[in-house]
Image (cartoon, rainbow, N blue to C red):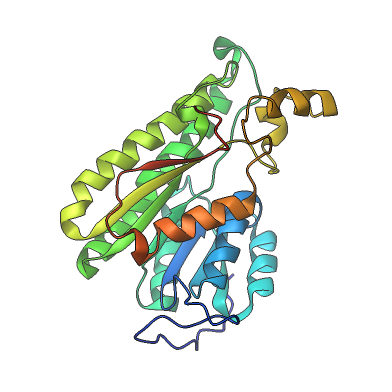
Length: 271
């Protein structure tokens, strides 16, 4: 599933973009999971624009290949099931082989269950949410943290949610999985800081992604959207560009003193 274009030079200083501005992630390499669409695609696009080489990793192999093709020589595609240990290990090995060194890992892949009373969510749906939203963080850490420790540097970003801070009814087990991710971020940050590895999270509010309908209660109408937007002081949904901007900062050297934070990129939703 990997594509080529690996002859990009790694300069010793930041490169400059078309407008002469420094590129935040010049010379960096990154994996972004769930990158074929939504917030993950926004993060991958911004990373590439900031000078990084990006592995676009997704269970949707066709979508990952399409975005990697769009990004050109800065990107390669990798099919991955983030809930499967062997698949995650293969993703990590492919990144090491392609890049030689991995600087950034973004755990963005996520799923939800349909809105329902907590006791009515099926065991299969619960297991799926836990496998993709929770177990995946463990699996990627197991595969990639030793590499970052050996390098004495690295940045891990977990895409959590405002649902982990301000839970909404009928999405109970999704809320809980994102709350777990925020706690895991802090625990990882404390343990890995002496090894030079930073770990942060971002908490988006709902955005124009495949999960939006579920977050709005299973129905997407102008009336439901207006009601949901009324809970966001800035009056709009999160966008992939918003997530890309926040992720690029937190994973850059500009944020070298920031670890263990869960940054709310939510238009004031959690105030």
